[in-house]
Image (cartoon, rainbow, N blue to C red; front, side):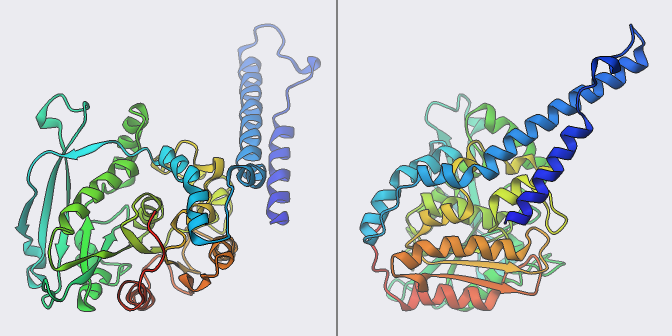
Length: 399
């Protein structure tokens, strides 16, 4: 940690020194435009370096002290812990900013031909906002694929897993369709084979589309993950009406931006009882703010959709994990996954695990670290969800 901070400080100091304002002897002479242009460029670059150094110091170096003052966790019991983090859960809701979207009519369910062999259905739930929609043609819809194992009945109910695709994908890919890189390993299909119902929502695909919509969301004091959280909640309402589903045993498993959705939404949706986060969990401050050749830093990309108001005031990934705790949580990471440098992931994971350890429930959090890349780990995820949604009773109180 110290080594990374030293490198960052040296880099920033070098930038500031490089672009330090000229002395009076270096001021442009008169109205010589080439000299004035060079002077102005250096002056502006120096100001930019100052701003970046100031914000990096706030977001990264000052984070531990700031977060320590924001969280008042009480580890005496699970009940006391849940009560102690409620103010932070409210703070997290302000980061995600889910709007009020209400079901405006009956849901529609139709056979989904690409997955006919699984008797999949495409669910559409019409939505409208309280006081936000002036024209019915502007209403949203929550949409996704719903599959229930053939053996499930009202007398033999099954758990449900929300399966969320990533930014470059779509619901069918979770089942192995058009998955050229085989990153998903047909994990939704494997869940169905192993006796889980699956709900896989349609989220917005592509960086460019999400960037554009996120700009509009910020103007409206919303976020796209907030809108998509409410959409999955309305889909979940519909799925849990099916008598074949065990309403008390719902999990979530997402890859990449689907992992983000799992991390973002589970703290705000108590019906999710266990979560698997694949290809997302990270040392969040470094991931967002500090460029490093060992991983992709969001600050260096065009993915402006990935920046949310107030995120790094007090909500690193280990802190957000404490809003999932005491519910079971598995993190899946590949050592060759370029989104993260795996030693930083293990560092952040240990901080997350500490919440569970102090409550005496360390068996409820796991890190599956493998040599692979940006992909799901099907076997461990199935084992984890089978343990916590089928075999072990859910004994902790809901919040």
